[in-house]
Image (cartoon, rainbow, N blue to C red; front, side, top):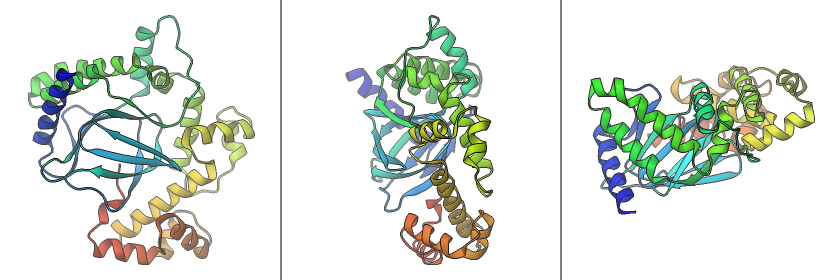
Length: 307
């Protein structure tokens, strides 16, 4: 226990060295980044996350997927298993003790290779496939994460040894109580992988009309089975998922490209401006231009970003 606390303190110091101010910082190894936030969030940050493991060294955060809420801190690590639109809010942070997090992307092919070594006799059963889940932080993972970030300050060591530290993190994650769920990320033709394919299609084509039956056929499921599994993974129906993608993108376009509501509405696939305004207000809490004006006035243009 004392060793784990020591590793967390060390990890926090290392993350701060790579994140001198608030934001996301890519480290030398692709797919590895650190995050810093020195104050709690008044606004939800909206964005799409890729499959990843998040290990918190200090502070706390809550992520929302549909109507589900997931809290994570130094005692709880978070796993994203599918690309999904989420919102997040830092709930514990201060300039003296900022929120500090290490994020390691979970590559399906790499997971698949390691599954063969970790589970040579076959995978344990896993009934749950929700795209986001929290689990108690593993001391071994925290220790490996600390060594990984430490290597980032040494270019030669980072190139040679950092991939081994990531592999250790993934193996320990697969051997943890949630290992069976993580393994589904790399299992070809698993329900999770098939829904992941559908999610990728919707992400790429969110501005086009959504034919659920055709999408179900694309991943070799009946429409009713597809709808059930899609919701069990993303906590949203396919149409709800598409709507969230559209609204998040419209907000991003209005904030970053100075588009008016009418242009953003058409850009993301809405045919009815009134429907767009109504759904936007229901999702973000106020009408499009009023929301954007409030965000710009408050200097909150970064509320549309990766969580």
